[in-house]
Length: 108
Figure 1: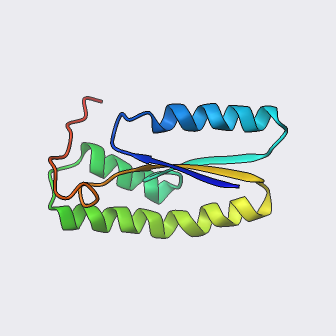
Figure 2: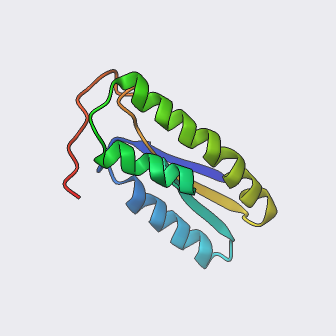
Figure 3: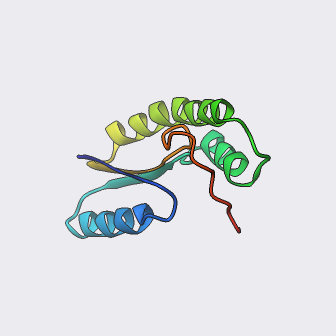
């Protein structure tokens, strides 16, 4: 089983993913829960730059998300095929996906 939660910041992706992961584990499933960007050291570094770094062009932000995904997919796929019976991924929607809308400010 492969489930993806996608949406804009603060739309409840993590909450819904955690509820599903908890329920699947109660059912005896082994679950890999991860996020994009994030989930790997490269992805977490990209997440920090996107959330707390300098303002950047939409193309630069999209390139960072692409780099994070290029690192995340093979690593999470290998983990999923070796042990997990279910995978839950939370994906953040980039400015590129939001057609150039203003990037929200992050307070933390």
